[in-house]
Amino acid sequence: MKTRNIILVALASMTMCACSLDEYPYGFYSENNFYKTDADALAATNYIYDAINYIEYSRAIVFLGDMNTDVMYPKGDAKTSTKELDGWKPSTFKTNTTLYNFYHYSYITINRANAVIENVGAMKDLDADIRNQYVGEAYFMRAYSYFNLTRNFGRVPMHLTTVKKLEDTTVGAAKTLDEVWNQIFSDLDEAIKLTKIYSTPVTGRTDKVAAYSLAAISYLYLASAKESGVPQYADMTFDVDKYYAKAVEYAGHVVDDPAQTTYGLDPNLMDIYDVEKPTGPEHIFIMSMDRTGETEGQYSKISKMYIPYIAGGTVYLKQGDTGKFIPTHDGWSEYGTQKAFYDSFEAGDLRHDWLFCDTVYNAAGVAIFGGDSGKSLSYPFCRKFIDPDFVGDKTSTKPFLIRYSEIALTYAEAAGPTAKAYALVNAIRNRAGLADLAAGLNITQFRNAVRHERVYELAFEGKGCYDLRRLNKLHTDITAATEQGLTAEDMVFYPIPSLETDLNPYID
Image (cartoon, rainbow, N blue to C red; front, side, top):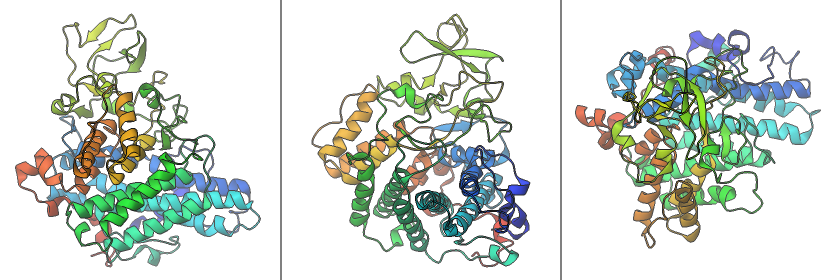
C-alpha cells in the first residue's frame, strides 16, 4: 500500500465520507475510546462494508468486469482511464486511475477488516454469538478483497494485521499465487465457522451462506483456470479434480441443503431487480445504497450510467409482459450495449425481452423513442438497475455482488451433468422462458453449456471478464485484444499500480 496515503488507509474514518451504513467508528485505532460497547463493535463491522460503496470502487466493478469485454462500450467522451481499459492498452495500465482506485479501496477494506478481527475479537464482554458474527464477517470481507485483488493483479501484498505505523505499509507481494489463495480459503473457513445464516437477508451484510458461496466461486475459478492452461494458474500446486469437488461441496451447502431456507431461486425474474426487494431470496450479497443518503456512495447513480441520454426529464419503461409502465430519469450514456451481444440471446429469452429496453414511453404508454415512434435509441440499455422512485439523480439501485443463481451455476459447472446440476440450470432457463438443456451431454459439453448460460444470466453484473480470464479466452474473445495481437500472458493480470510500486520497494 502506498506510504503517502497512510492517512487515507489508517485514518479513513476521519477523512472520508461516502458511507452507506448507519454506524460509524469515531477513532479507528484508539483502543482507549473505542471497541468498548456493542454499538462500537457494530459500527466497526459496518465500517468495513463502507469502503466498497465508494463510487471509485463500485464503478470499477463494471469497468473491470464488463466494460473491458465485447458486451459493453464507453461513450465517446468517456474518461481516459475508461477508454484505456475498454481498449486493452497495457502500456497505460500502471498509471490507470480506475485500477489504482480499485486496488486502493480494496486495501482500505482489508485494513478495516483487520481492525475488527483484532479488536472486536478481543471484546470479552461482548455476547459471544454477536462477537463471532462480526469477526466472521470481517474474515469474509478480507477474503472477498483478496479474491478481487488477486484475480486482477495476481501476487499482491498480504496485510494480515492493521496498518498502525508507516513501516506497516511496505509489505512485500506474496511469493506465489498459492499463498494468496490459501489465505483466502483460510479466511473463508474462519467466516464459515464463526457466522450464522440470516433468517432474512440483511442488505449490505454477509453471513455463512455468503462465505460458502465465495468459497465455491473461488474453487471453481482456480480449477477451471488451471484446467484451461491460464498462465501462472497452470503452475499452481493443487489438483484440478479436487478443487472442482470442493466447489461442489461448498456450493452444495447453498443449493442442496434442506436446512438452508433463506436463499433460493426467485421465481419472478423481474423481482430480482426490484429496488424495493433487496432482501429477496436471490441476494446473498448486495450493496446497500439507498436514495435517502446524503452523498453519492450512500445513494446510487448507477442507473444514470446505463440509460442513454434521451430527451431530459422522466421517461417510462414497460414492466415485463404487463401493461404497467414505470418511470425513470434520463441517463448519461456511459455504459453502452454492444449490438452483437444484444442480438446473441436465444429467441424468447426473457432476460433479453424484459431486462433490456429498446423503447421508452411517456406516462400514457405512448412510445417516444424506439418502437413505432420514428426515433431510435442510441442503444438498447440494460434495465437491471432502475429505481422508479428516484429523487433527482439519487436512486436505491445496487450492484449485485453474489446472487443465488450464480451459485447454482457454479455448482452445475463444477459438478458436471448430474441430475441436480441439470435441475439447477433448467430452473434458471425456465424462469427466463427457455426450454431445458439437451439431455445426455458429456461433462465437457455440459460445462460449456453452463458457461454459456452464465453469459446471459449474469450479464452486466461484473462477472464476464473474469469468466473469460479463467477460461483463457481474454486474448481470443475480446476484439481489442485480437486487433492488437495481445497474448494470454499480456492479459492474465493487470500490473500493480505505479503509485504503489514506486513507494514500496518490496513489491516486485
